[in-house]
Image (tube, rainbow, N blue to C red; front, side, top):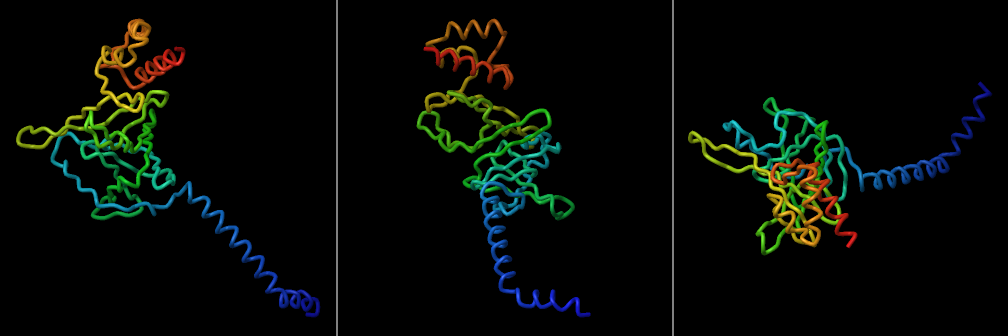
Length: 245
């Protein structure tokens, strides 16, 4: 029994010191946690918006991008980054929808429309592609009459290649339908332009139009039909030419 007396006395008279150590450790933990959540977060504390109503449930075509497919997403909101979450993008109302997989209501996951003024951007990771979207509020100019919104940033150089994923409403058999009709834009010198064909692209880079036209012909690129990667590489080439001037 005596061999336990000394350790017990030491423990008995050490609470103030031990308390200081605990307080210091707690303070460090609180600081590190605060620093982490300034840039990263994994909880759903960002969920602040209204419930999403599936208004297109009777339509054959849905305005939801990649509807019916499971894919990963990253959200940038209020200066924080949220990884490994479920998002959807409604290309008709231009809204980002958070899918809360932590609970089930009426046999389905709740969906919330995130407040647009708080969303900085998001990434949709489909497995074969990563689509980076930005909430571009600066696209409000008097010439093109746009209020901005969510745009995919397909190329980000001296010029920028943006894609507006949108759906257009039409009526078929007395029913609302939604036709997917993306719009290609190029942002150059603070002004954005709708690029629909080779001629419009050459006009935008008129100072090097001869070289660019040769590049388009050699690579058999038709701007109207070209894919995202083709146009991104074309713009990269155009920017490189302009830089040499």
